[in-house]
Image (cartoon, rainbow, N blue to C red):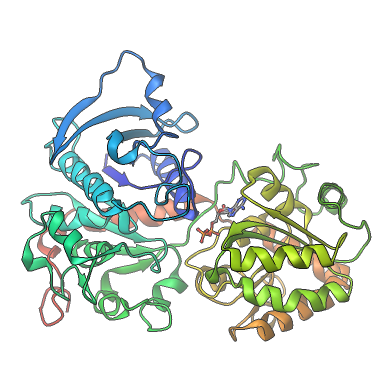
Length: 496
Ligand code: ADP
């Protein structure tokens, strides 16, 4: 049985700021179901520590990591039974706020130290140094917070193979030179072919340079990040490692996101039961204080940040509100987007409902109750909301990038039995406006619209499919990984 240590800084439902949390819950569960011995390593945040109460008799493993006394607690995820180790180090992780920011929204001043310690513990576990009788064949690292793990493992003879997954290349874990020195990293790593990136320490370069394989969360994004428009300065390194870079589309948790059984929506429904979906729509209109009529209802859920194209939304929504459309928006984020959205909602009572904050239940009801769902992201590594929308018969209207391009098939370039949404290529509000125009024209043609809905609901976005691809990747690494693992010097031969 293949043993995999899955290292992550977020885990749904305990700690979530984005899609990484969902993946960290669902992928290990699907791997476990298909026979992989997978265990998760997570920082011991306050929201996670109650898991240690599951088994009051069990004692943690005590470790000394630099100046820090660490307790490593073994627990299980209640829903799926996947084993989890919690890295309990109160001075670094026992804090209120998000995993990365203090309650004022500032990055924790010592994030580098926090995730370097996390990486050290992973390395101890992976190399047998934690005194635990379980050593992985492979360490699956996620995002910059896990970036130093492959760096330190590369130094250890016979260490497990490593896979590094990029969930969003825009977040890189960049720190100054003093921080680099404070982590005790050798001077040789302060080099542009190692961890230095424009005079800063880059955690993510550790993952990209030193792991055996790199994955990202959709085939489209795997191609895009090799280009300057999407690579955030790392396109050269990623292009250099293109043979080792794979795009594996995320799945969704089909038990949580299932319109036929969802307890959070007004009425469960299946494909074809459009009258039941209509009741979800009515309930959503009521809940959101919107006018109840036949005009299209369009949703948006997500972080209110530049990536998500909120400025494009703000430009096109007034026109569509003027034409009778209604919008229901759920999100939180930057003030520069929250303020104009609030203003728009005030200007359009009964037409635009805005909920600022995080609300899992409402996100299900929007997904179930809307006719269409917008995702005009500037870039989107995979995107989950368009997958949820497809599964709930809510037609997505998206920018044709990354995972959105891989999953939303426009009638303009797919067959009638495949088309499931609308997409636009040219970045900017005009593209979104044009795609919304085509969507709204089709909305008026009920049989054509229902065909799009049914096509979307028929697609398999389960984790079983994705987990199979990860397993194949793991298998491909196990016999020969050692000979492959060295930093891919740009001039070198290793990954030529
Ligand atoms: P990202 O990871 O870039 O934020 P994804 O689409 O991959 O985007 O995943 C976002 C996840 O977070 C989805 O599960 C989405 O439904 C959820 N989400 C985002 N904002 C909110 C919110 N305000 N309320 C509820 N769920 C939200």
